[in-house]
Amino acid sequence: MKVLHCIAQLPMKTGSGVYCTMLVEGMAQRGWDNAVLYGTQPPFSAQTFRQSVDAALSCRIQEFPVTFLSDVLPFPIAGMSDVMPYQSTVYSAMTDAMLSAWMTAFKHRLQQAVSAFQPDVIIAHHLFILTSLITELFPRVPVIAISHGTDIRQLKQHPQIHEQYIKNLSGLNTVFTVTPKDTDEISRLLGIAPNKIRLAGGGFNPRLFNDAQRHHFDGTFRLVYAGKIAESKGIFELAKALPLILARYPHTELTLIGNASEEQHAQLLQNAQGSPHLHIHNALTQKDMSDMLKQMDIFILPSYYEALGLVTVEALACGLRVVATEIEGLKTLLGDAVNNSGIIEYTALPRIYNVDQAVEEDKPVFVSNLAQTIMLQMERISMGHDIYPAVAAEIHKHSWNGIVEKICATVRGLA
Image (cartoon, rainbow, N blue to C red; front, side, top):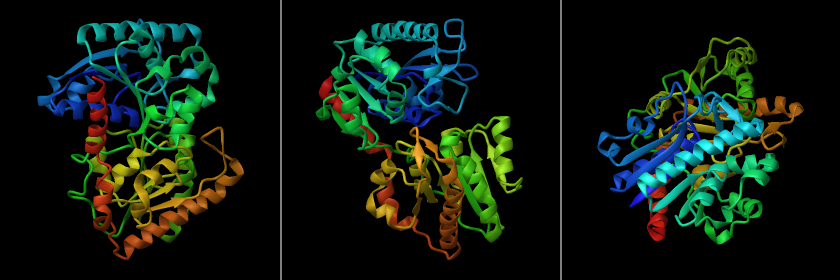
């Protein structure tokens, strides 16, 4: 079996990039041949996949990078989110000349990849411009698309891009979603028949994210957030919650993992009242992330919008307790057994507008509620309650193994 995987941005640095990489690795482990077309830029290596998979698998992977910050594309990678964990361009801010150069570069690389690799099936990530280009160029090759939720947000916020650049998606063979709630919107926005849309869900890599050598409470509460440093993530409100927590639990450390600008760094410290208990680290590799999570007690996702929040599942797999906002996709994925166990607690969202922006006057109450929910989990930890063993089997149902096999079964049916 020969599968060409296509993603327009950098792999391994966002949830969709990890999703793509895990599919490639899973299919290579099954003896399939894979090619990967993706966006990259300095200072990242063009050999992303060869460095990130086992050496025994690398021989089954060909790479077709499209390089940004280059003579051909002299601007940063265009990301599906308006804030990416690396230098990026916002799709809606691209000029006609930039979009033309983008499409020419990807069209040229796609034609090279298909001619050289001759795929049986193409898997395209995001229901957006790249997937539309693929269906236009290769109408005789079966195409599976994977929607990660961020594409739906872009379509809703920027209908002009949809109208001008996104066509032909009704002809996709299958669309996989990470959350069940996206089915109706995908069908309505893109005219894709509901019987073509299937739920894949989101998963974690059990080789990395597991409870082996996990940290146990030693008297200092270690709180952690990992993700983009952006207003939409509620991260600045989390920083404001830290002084409220320290007033009751002075032996507390809050670590934020994500690439913060100097201005954002200063704002986070100011919101935390200059507390030395706040630590900010740059984004980590998956291996470094798993090592870091295993040294923590509580993972916090205060986001105003997430399609799924996969890093939360990774944290649960490492045995951490979790505090998250009421993310519909996450609650649906985890199910009642995990949601009602106490290993995860949800905080009500403030009023939201423009998909992922919080009403300013609601933020003080959100900060207070967030602090209270975090302290509830801290109290449970201090009492010695270890919930993880009771729900470990439920959490591990969401590993990559089942998701990869579900998508592989569809590929076999189309090839």
